[in-house]
Length: 248
Ligand SMILES: Nc1ncnc2c1ncn2[C@@H]1O[C@H](COP(=O)(O)OP(=O)(O)OP(=O)(O)O)[C@@H](O)[C@H]1O
Image (cartoon, rainbow, N blue to C red; front, side, top):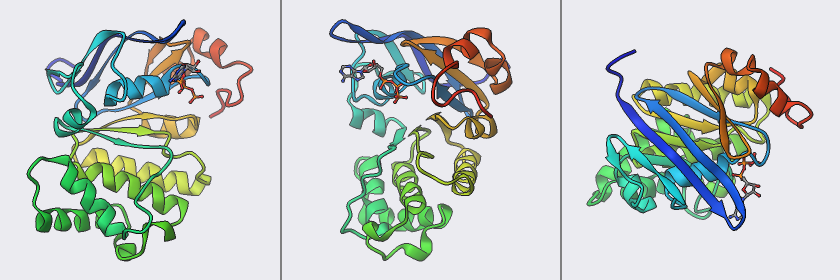
């Protein structure tokens, strides 16, 4: 697989909260065009890792490279401008603004110096892509949960990321809806965006991820394809007795 470009490279990332090392010496590479899943039992450090990647937290130690640049000391906004987008589990649109206006805000925020007519146009194109065009003029608070998730992805894509971070966006969706969301994430990748996602729903991980990083107690326990990691004895042991188990 020589010659593949790394889009994200974490080198020995650690994050300490008081006496707790929530993320401990985490190293991994995500390659261009890849859909990478981060899984692990509750409290494994997944959300903390995502917060280190997006810039919510600075690491206690370690470095982060985005598209070949060292962004360890850059703010969340600077990382966004450099090509990193993020969608949250808890969707927080501006409830009184329309769906279209919400995505337009994302389009204006992503690249410095963006112009309004252009941003509005790009927002419409994204609503088409995410299946929300028919709801463009609704207030955001009128959307269903699945439509909310679509809006969150559209808003993140509006910032024109090359790497999109998704934090449990399937949470709360019914299985059929989760399948629709899987289709949406695939289409995001088809458009040339690399995707890193945290997910508890194992069938979603199986269907979507090219590669999986398994965390436990702040550390990377295993890395590989879904088949490889779910056959790994330490991974099976880490999941035994946990609520989500390793059902697939
Ligand atoms: N801001 C914080 N201050 C102190 N401790 C924290 C903070 N954020 C997370 N932790 C702790 O760090 C550990 C890792 O938490 P984190 O939320 O990253 O795990 P997770 O894998 O995302 O879990 P879950 O699957 O339950 O969301 C936990 O023990 C948690 O209590």
